[in-house]
Image (cartoon, rainbow, N blue to C red; front, side):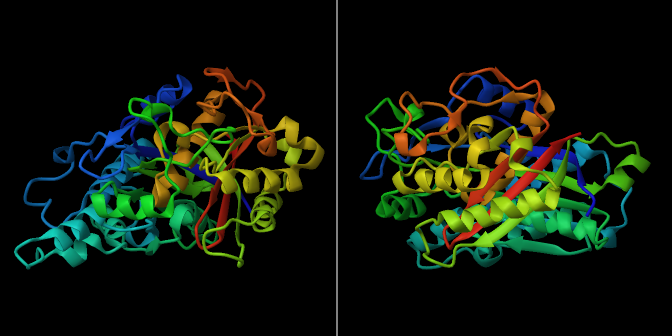
Length: 401
């Protein structure tokens, strides 16, 4: 099957709302993780996205639109503007494929905490997980497939893979694909603390609390934001003279089918092999991996073992970093944000660091990018891993345009 062109990038991320600002901050090793929600019983760190909703919505339009949808509309708008394809695609041939793990968390939190006993009347359309996709569709008049994928941490990555399939099969001419998440609210954070997966830290050390693959890692920090890409066929992109950021050359989807929260290396390996097979590439052809790398004690080891199983003797050739150390874990939007980062790494032939890792866990022995400002002059292909609760694994494989 032919590769799919990535012609538009749009982000609203903890490091800013342009891909360049995001990538420049990551290359400097700048952490966006900070102390949040000081009223909670336990200290909490997260990465918040600076965002001015008034740039995209009037006050009247904001009624019943949760922050998760606001972020999605902004990121999708910027992706379409970057692609330069707005207005030249038939409505019926434009699709939206969006990932979201938990929907409108702020709207639901407000409804639960309403002391008057009456929830706001637009609570349901504000918090339903498909609200963001619908808001993006209305903004762009997309009358083709408008679909939401709720697959925990793999949501946005799966959405991008499904969008690429639709482009390849000719079901749509243009796909707006990505995801959004905005869940830094007390109820959600307390639930994650109860799972004991969030990073521990001393006061003042929030920024460096997430340490993927390090011996002293203790978990992740939540993040919020949105990221979308515009996908179209190579033929269409060439016909309209579009700039191609990268090619989405392959993807792999699999399920562990073993446990809801404990990852499985063979399941992840199946997704990795599927992505390579779809792209017609060998492990040695891949120069960079943006790892799922949640900095949990079990997860990082399992991902390392999956990569080792597939790459074998070529594992030392693969340079790896988890950028979650700097932008937090965006859950349902993480796969899209990290896909954009992977595309930018290919474009610039530069690799963001695996930050805050002063001592690599021997069980996670990998060729980690430990320095800031690392160049990769020969980089031609890269992968982005997203491995989710529920056992779903998604791998996106990009090649340089």
